[in-house]
Structure formats: structure tokens, C-alpha cells
Image (tube, rainbow, N blue to C red):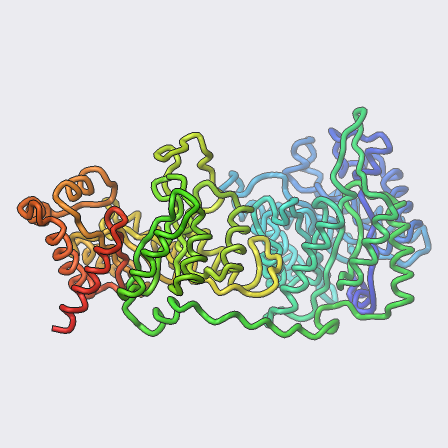
Length: 636
């Protein structure tokens, strides 16, 4: 074992070989056979294929040991031959290099175990570690030049593999003069995430922290996706001040997406296409370049020609540490007025408005102007409330801000939106300068005007907050792809301080806070003591709730309205004393309802940082009257 592979990477690129399985299949080996066992059963064939890649110009030969772990070998009754098969794999690669007379390195291949780790599967992390350690110990004893972990999609699994590799090196009977280099690669889907939903940014951070020498991408779909993903990984590590030492990057894509025809498997990407991408990989800073499924010696030959031509024109060091100066960060936009007021401890008055059913916004805008003049700080624009068809809340929020001059909070229900639409809607809102988002689930479509509409969704409200605060406000989307500059969203969430299942509501609220929520809006509160008890339970479990609360206030219009809310609206409980007051008020119910709302407002200020007023029956003049009454009482 030697560190000369790393020395070579510091000086330029290394071209790895291509697919082993593709060539074995082309030579008549069926997919039902154990490819790894061919190290013992048909060693001449394996060595011949290594030689084909060497003659094509490969400088790194990967061993035929990708699936040589106890779990995969057990499917063929060979789990007792782990050491034999892995040792033979390294020897065959070394013998091929020696016979060719060329200078090349042996990279011992380690793939996933082929079983699911808990909690998805039944294999514990310790069992995974033990299996990896068994295979890696056999490989290291045969003295390869590097270990290459490839085609992993689960960060937990590759972490156990790398941990085992470090431990094998540390406890070897005759440890090498320098630790064996480790190349760690993961595979991504067409959506640029792993099948376990890890993004390139998450993968880059995790692998860099595991003290490996090379991180990158293999397999996946094809060169175009791999280039996009590895660029994100390079940018992530480059911007991370905690990156441990010198890290290089790898790219070994498939030859496109496989196609079946006539009982055979074909890959569409041509050798010329791979040659072009080899150059492009080198240009962005990838040092360890090769191919995966579907690639052949012809692909490697064209990549060799392209890399040689690139080297003649561009003598450059491609490690992150010495390649480029870090780009100056883009300064985020200033926080919204709402966020500034929250930061300053100002008491916030927000009022909810529904978009119109038609395309004429005049009545809504007139109401927004009335509320602004009455003292409202923000206008909350609901999105398809009660699952009823209405004008886009995006358009109304934009009009409120541009034509009325009042800052809006856009209600953003996740129900009925897939991840693509969520991304597009967030970008649209930000472009329209609507930066206050209220993340909510939304009303089930079955209760609305169009029950046949789809109800599917990809993220829950806490996930939306995380997407907004931890991705968009950092300048990247869900997949870690740059969106040009950081956004400046302020994110609110819902909370029911009177929830029947308070424990569940507290746990959900905690998730939203951890995701980055800036404030919360509550259901209408008619019994402040219930809210106090909720906050006490939260404090007992997590400490005092620091998240600003805008307490819900819904003025009662009359006794009939009161009984409807109490008996038919989920989450609203009106104490008997208040219901009795509304019954006794009779025709003066509206005035009594405003009086009750004013009294509740004063009591809520004990723990709330603002109020969230819901006008009954869209009667915005009642809200204006309430604001006036509260101001008068405050000045008395």
C-alpha cells in the first residue's frame, strides 16, 4: 500500500477504468451468477478484462469485489469465502498491471451490503460494520493502493463502511507507513438526491467529515447529472471552513439510462460523449474520473484522449485547497417589516382576508386599505380557505403590497402541492416581493367545491419551514442547487393552544421551531387559561416558549354565530360563560362580541406578541371598530 495515488492526484487527474459487470455480461456471464466468485472460478477472464482497460489508458483498476461481502455472497452459498474472493480480486488486478508493464494503481472496490439497515430493514449498524470490516480486512491484507466505496445511497451505511476501513488500518498487524487512501462515492437519482433523499450538499458535508481523501459520485443516471451533482459537492466543501485537509473529487457516471432490447441491456451514451464529459469534469475540478455501468474500454479510450488534450492545454492543480479563491458571498436582502418588528419586540396586529371568488380584487383591496388605516400591521392572505375556489393568494398578496402599501403574509398550504410546485411557488412569491410565508397544511379538498381534486403533498408544514429557512434563505433549493442568491423569507406556523391532544401539538410545534419558524398564529382563543396551561406544559418539557405568538381573535357576531363556532368548527371551544353572554345580548350581539374580543385581547397580551384577527363574515369594518376600541382602552 502506498500514498503515491494521492501524490498523483495532487499533480493532475487519474483516469479510472469502466464497468466490470457490463464486460462480464458481454462475455456471456449471466446476471444470476456471482460476478465476484469469478475471481476464483474464471480468474483468466477477470484479468483479461482488467488488461483491456489498461490498454485503453486507465490508470486505476478497480477490483472485481463490489459485492464480495457476507450478505451478498450468502445468496450464492459463498459467505464462507469472503477472504478468498477479496484477496483474489486484489491479486488479479495487480497481476494485470504487472503483466502490462504500465504504471497504474489498484483500487479495492466495496459496494453496499445489499440489505437494508434498521429501522427500514433488520440489519443493525453494528452488523453492517462487522460485515464491512470482514471484507475490508481481506482486501487490505492483499495490499491495494486505495479503497473505493461506490454506489452507496444511505449515508448511515457508507459511514459504517468508512469507520470499518479506518479501524482496519489502525489495528493492522503490520500497518502501512501511511493510511490507505479512501475514495467515497454515492449514487443519485434523476432528482439529484439519493434514494434515501440525501442532497449533494448533505452528502458532501457528511463525507468530508469522515476524513476520506476523495469524495464524489458514481453510477447514477449519466454524465450530465453527475456533473451537476459533483459541482454542488465541490462548491459545498470549498465554502466549508471546517473541511479537513486536502479533499479531491471523483466522477464515474453510467453510460446513460439503460434500455432493454431483444433480451439484452444497452446504454445509450457514446464514447465520444464520455470524452467530452471527461474534459468537463476536469475543468470543474474533478481529479478521479472514470465510468460505471455501461462503460467499456472504448469509453475509457476516448476519455484518455480528452484528458491528455486537456492536460496539454491546462496545467492546473485540481484540489479544492489550491484551485480557486472562494467566491464572495452574496449578501441577503434585508428582513421583512414583520421580521423587523418581531425582532424589536413590537406588538403585531394581523388581520386575515380571503381572496375574491372572481377576478375583481377591488373589494378586497378596499378592505385592506381600511384595515391599514385602522392600524393593522400585516394582512394575512388565505389560500383557498375551506377548500373553496378563489383567486390566487399570490396575486392578492402582491396587490395588497403594491396598491395598498400594507405588508402581506401569504398563507402557503402544502396540501395539493408536490415538491416541484412548492419550489416554483416559493420562487414566484419571492420574485413578487411577498416574503412572509405562513406554512400550513390546508383544508382537505373533500370539504370544498371540488372534492375530486387531488389532495397529495410531498412536504408537511415543518418540512416547508425547513425548506424556506435552511435552503432558500441559504441560496439553494431542496436538492442543494443554487437559486442565484439567498432569499429573505420570514416563516410562520400554526399552533392550537387549545388542542385536545396537547402532547402531540407540543411535539409538532417543537419540530416547526427546530425547522426555523419565526412566529406562530393560533386558533381563535376564547379561554386564555387553556392557552396558559398549554404554554406551561411546553415550558415543563422544553423550557419557556420563545417563539413569538400572534394569538387568534375571532369576534363573535351574535349568539347563532357563537353556537355554530362552538359546535361545528373543529378546534374552537367557547366557554359556557361567553356563550351565555352572547345569548343574553340578543340583538346587541355584535356589540357584545366586540366587547368580549376587546377583553380577550387585553388578557392575551400577557403571553402573546400580537393578535391575529379573523373578521366574521368578511366584515372588515368590525375589525376597524375593534382596533379603535382597543386603542381607546389603552389610552384610558
